[in-house]
Amino acid sequence: MKKRLVFLLTIGLVLGVFSATALAEPTAASNAVAIDTIWVLIATVLVFLMQAGFAMVEAGFTRAKNAGNIIMKNLMDFSLGSLLYWAVGFAFMFGVGNKFIGLEGFFLQGSFEHLGLDIPITAFMIFQTVFAATAATIVSGAMAERTKFSGYIAYSVVITGVIYPIVGHWIWGGGWLEALGMVDFAGSTVVHSVGGWAALAGAIVLGPRAGKYDEDGSINALPGHNLLMAALGVFILWFGWFGFNAGSSIAGTDLSIADIAVTTNLAAAAGAALAMITTWLKHGKPDVSMSLNGALAGLVGITAGTASVSNVGAVIIGALSGILVVYAVGFIDRRYVDDPVGAIAVHGICGAFGTLMVGLFALDGGLFYGGGLSLLGVQAIGVIGVAIWTFVTALVLFKVIDAVIGLRVSAAEEQEGLDITEHGSVAYPDFVPLHWKSVTVSKKEE
Image (cartoon, rainbow, N blue to C red):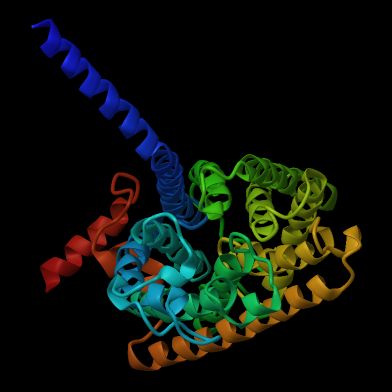
């Protein structure tokens, strides 16, 4: 009995030592892969939550009769965008191809070994999916309160499936701008400028909302219905942005994610503070809605260089973005381009500005750190190239949609509100009984 017990203990000890020796290195590597995968999925969830933030900002900054329509557009941006990005967008963006576009990997089939990822390709794809949806949903706010839902859906499918992925390939997927050395860590240009320039094209083709501009050129404010909702949306976006920026490291084992979180937060805080101060000095009172947009401007501005600049650089970029957005919103309005939520200024202009600032403030290659003009020149080429591509393709797309499907609702439908005319319901039935009454009467007449 004792011999048998000794034999079993000896075998167990040998197997234990062998297992520990044989599996030590693979276990360490597996742990790193697991941590990185979990980090990317956590960041994905944070960026997904930004869809709710955009929905709240856009709904809050627009009128109550269109709130349901805003929610529906944001829902479909993500739902249809997820399907299109999985089917073709991810392949166009990250598949093997040329310097302009990826040509392999449709429906996530084939090899993506050229990306050099340690994490599963599915984890990387779902992270990129929520980015693609963000680019699409930026446009919703600029086209709010007068866009036909069917026309908007057609646009959303194309930007997620084609326009955005091609820009992403240029900068992140081995394209010509990546080859030049352009730095856009988390997407000031790839995501935000693409959304901003597409929003500009859409707002131009649509024209302004009824009552926004008088015949004598004067500008009328059309206040949003819920500033608290808009503020909640901004805080959700700020929260989600930690996943947006730090998650772009694609590695939870990369300790620079802590530095990225700090630069992200400092830029947002500086943007909000300087937007508040600017409106206070300019108008005599600190404006709430512009301060909210200032926080978003700071976040958009820092996104390109969040991993490349110091904390001081982040504060400067965020502060300048907060000042810029105040003047950019006014400039766009005076050009009679109606953008209800300021998406063009926040995402288009501040996205371009933040990308250029990398050429000045990057610790490695920035002009202010002895790097010369080389990086700044590359950043400028990228900003201009993406702006031209996105604006022209989006303008053509909106023109085609307008001719084939129709892009704008009728004057009567706009007056009634898109919740009822486009979806047959309202977001606040207890507070807009006249709308329900008109719907009931029209149905009885039919």
